[in-house]
Amino acid sequence: MAATTITVPFQYAASNAFVGPLPANANETVVLTTPLMNIPAGSILGIYWMFSYTPGTSNTSAKFNIRQGATASGALVNNGTLQGPVTAAVNALFSGMYYDTLAPANGIQYSLTIQQIAATGAGTFLDGCLIIEVMQRTATLS
Image 1 (cartoon, rainbow, N blue to C red):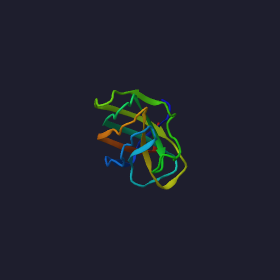
Image 2 (cartoon, rainbow, N blue to C red; image 1 turned 90 degrees about the horizontal axis):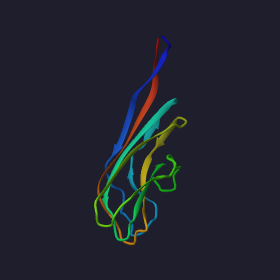
Image 3 (cartoon, one colour; image 1 turned 60 degrees about the horizontal axis):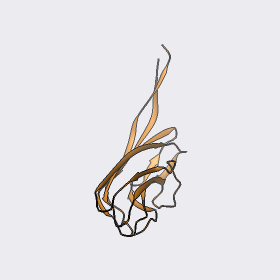
């Protein structure tokens, strides 16, 4: 039997505190941000999120990004194509997962952002969460 390296959870950071507000336009806006974290060498980060809102006037779709840092200008983690249709004034629920790898870092945060495509009226936040699971290779089984 070949040796197998396993990866186990090492640390978590989570937030359900809405940053907002949702604007009455399509500007990319931070909606959730994790607390500061210290990332050890050799880590893989599992990123899990859920966001529910009532789209505002003229909003036709929602585009989500995962970014390093606490602003909409932080480094993009995903490929920028997490987008789905919405109907104004009809509650919408989105969720997803992604991963990140980076050099050891102290005091890093992650944020979930939204772009309300074609919106001319502000949406209303209903619920959401952002969870980062830091996993580290810890053992080789033979």
